[in-house]
Image: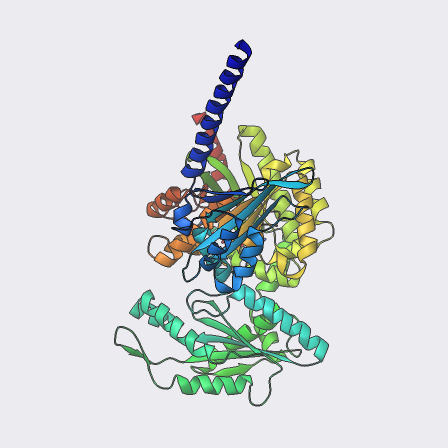
Length: 576
Ligand code: C2E
Ligand code: CA
Ligand code: CA
């Protein structure tokens, strides 16, 4: 009797425990925003849990055969995939996921299957449905941004350069030619100033739409920036040549362009043309040559076309004697480094400084790096300049760290050409060692262009640098072709959002959506985010609100010379 009572008590206790467990599991499922199907395979029991009705309203599953009731909920073309997910039983993998689009709706859900085995037999299976509409749409938007210019829908610059490089490779193999046409609208700046940027954008857009008519299997078109477009023709022929396209565009814009505000504007443009293999055998250089001759066309007047020839390039280079000055400056080391502070948005504490090169020529004239760095990259002087920048910046940095005992990072801009040097990694490491700084405090800024030519080699070098603790940051993010999903596999710690997004963040809804998405996704992927070129309180407030980690820009500080840096570090020291 005693024994029986004990058994009953035990059973009651177990029952209560099981009910409590059951309640707990149900609560957990119901409080998530997901829906679940649970299969007890041995007893052939099927149960639905969580937010079932928000996915499959009114559908009741009594047994496994009822799963077919779910098929109409996904797009017709993915029903088979969906079915194989629901019945998925792969012994080698305990989990599988796939995204499905709902039938007739812009809604996406992720279906994840988890399986439990006992002695090689399936005992339990759980299928989870999760709404991923928001992330999917954001991803699509980023992928689009990666390849296209938002305003016109034409290719963006970086993607165009990639496609042009493919054209050039193909032309090399097939012994054919490629024409590159560089187009710039005449007097666009005065139109923009006179009519305002909204109308300016409309003109850029309408002209872009007009160019779309010329896209074909062997014609690619891109908008580079503002009112600059580039077209490439693979293997031009008399029916499809720079001249025919030039004439056709001319005739299309003869009649005035009607604008949404009722006004009309008459457009004209100049075109520079450079051809593979005559002008150059390299995609970037072809574009450069086409641009140079476009300037020559502009000199002749409005609506002109100019083909590339060698004397034009020579003239151009002679005029731009900056190249020679540059070589002298390298020889005399006529450069200086400035340092622009970066701050954590929340605490407003110093995060680090970005080293920026400064050059005054012998006449004391300031020549901006955006002008001479591309030239230095072209004529190879970037290699000695680059080494000087790394050593000079690290030398100062090491002195400051010792003198002010300050905790901050040093970011260095490294050009794509520098990565090509066999000894690049070694050189950086040896300078870090020489000045006894910690590699974790050094960050190298790269732009997406480093990946264009030698993807694998660069990725390998970046991995190596990171193994030593050096941080890698991706500069000018948003202007190039990389989408966040593409970046996922790359060895990068930080993303620097380009100034162009910050400029328009308080005025342009589209830019804001993109910026929000970039910040949201970057955070999800675990990157640190720095916004560049922040000049105004309103921009800072907005970025702080979106969770952007760090801020760089005139709002906090312009780049500082060495004295400026000493003052800054002294003031931080005295605050401590
Ligand atoms: P970057 O790497 O994107 O550098 C940021 C540029 O934005 C700097 O121009 C900086 O002075 C400027 N800037 C920062 N905050 C603001 C702001 O709030 N408003 C405005 N209007 N501008 C701001 P900088 O120094 O003229 O450099 C231009 C570009 O030249 C750099 O762009 C980088 O691509 C290149 N560069 C500069 N220094 C070096 C260097 O040491 N090595 C290499 N390889 N490139 C460099
Ligand atoms: Ca930079
Ligand atoms: Ca930048």
